[in-house]
Amino acid sequence: MGTTASQLGKDMLSEYQELTFLTKQEILLAHKRFTELLTRDEKDLANTRVPIERILTLPELKSNPFRKRICHVFSTSEYKDGSLTFEDFLDLLSAFSDSATLEIKSHYAFRIFDFDDDGTLDCGDLEKLVNCLTGETDDTRLTPEEMRQLINNILEESDIDKDGTVNLSEFQHVISRSPDFVSSFKIVL
Image (cartoon, helix red, strand yellow):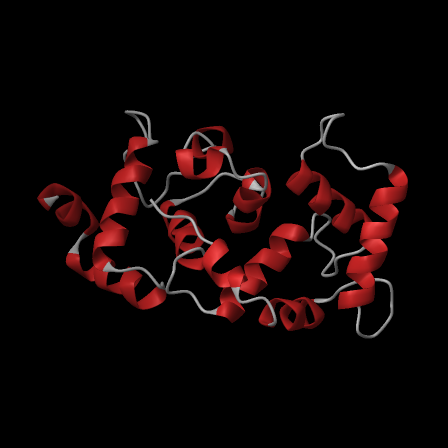
């Protein structure tokens, strides 16, 4: 542990604690896990981006049906390739931590579910969301009629302004009525 803390530096460690919902121990563990994903030539933590393929090998993401969307939402890459820097990785862990607020968790959940990144959840986003949750195999896929009915039910419940989409505030309103959301929206290293 001593070398991990010294590699980060006390100032950086303190700064990361101030900027995230993570404890010192969680940041040190995140640093260890992130550096394990680096190759031998990629030891410059400040400037290294880990490709999405390596990030997705983490057991905590491997079985998450939204794993690729999660990486894309937290990636600051100008190429939108889902690669993550250490700070991107910390942001991801912070948003999914037990200490993150409902507002933060719902904001990122909304972004993850907004597959076309247009700021609303429309029928296409909702269909992809349902497919991610149910699986896209022939055995688990909903029929077109079941999908249509489910999306209509979601919009009936969530679309307050009746514009055919769910915006962030409508999403947050629905989430605020779901006490299990905060506890289920987490990733623990």
